[in-house]
Image (tube, protein in one colour):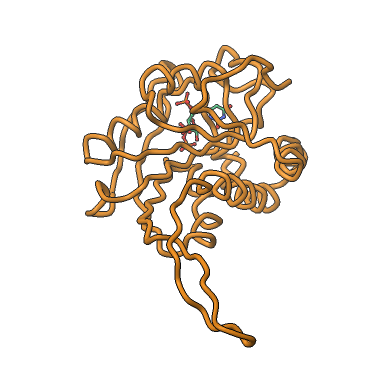
Amino acid sequence: MTESRTFPSNVVIVDHPLVQHKLSILRDVATGAKEFRELIKELAMLEAYEATRSFQLAETTVTTPITQTTTKVLAGKKVAVVPILRAGLGMVEGILELIPAAKVGHVGLYRDPETLKPVAYYHKLPEDIAERDVLIVDPMLATGGSAVAAVEFLREKGARQINLLVILAAPEGIDEVVRNCEDVKIYTCAVDSHLNDHGYIVPGLGDAGDRLFGTK
Ligand code: PRP
Ligand code: URA
């Protein structure tokens, strides 16, 4: 099911057993909207844990109940979480629980069902986006059109350090992002087999937005 080919080093497949277990339940057509939302939140947290591994630390001094000691804290990293609407919204809360000081921007894109091209309908970013490490979040990377449009938009607004966190990717989407955004690091829980004629990931998990929000 998962692609066995190797990907460039800027593609990280988060293959932790907890992630793979939760992803299997997420894929199941019998999983309802409530559990689907919980799983997307948990998977987003686990991915963010991996995506923040390179954050810099600074030394500080703490007094424990026993003694004073030198220890480490995050070195003032400024982060923006940017969900691609709608389905990306499901990944925001979990990441904010880990990084409460992060600001949130929104990029509204929907995929035209005929052309599969992204159509932009909304955006609102933190004013200081150029100073922040950006985590674009969207559960699905299919053709890659939406992700590339989001990266290009963020770059126009000055963002430099951009990571893309998805739950599931198609090889076509990975190739598209790598081709157009070579400095963007991609995190995914799995890379599936291919896209079907309607641009859906196979085996995939169906329409992420509809499953999150119960719209179908
Ligand atoms: C889905 C998904 C991605 C996009 C991926 O959103 O959440 O944003 O499709 O497809 P792509 O890689 O081929 O661009 P959709 O357009 O269905 O909008 P929605 O979240 O509002 O349902
Ligand atoms: N968008 C989805 O929600 N699911 C897919 O499989 C592809 C695009």
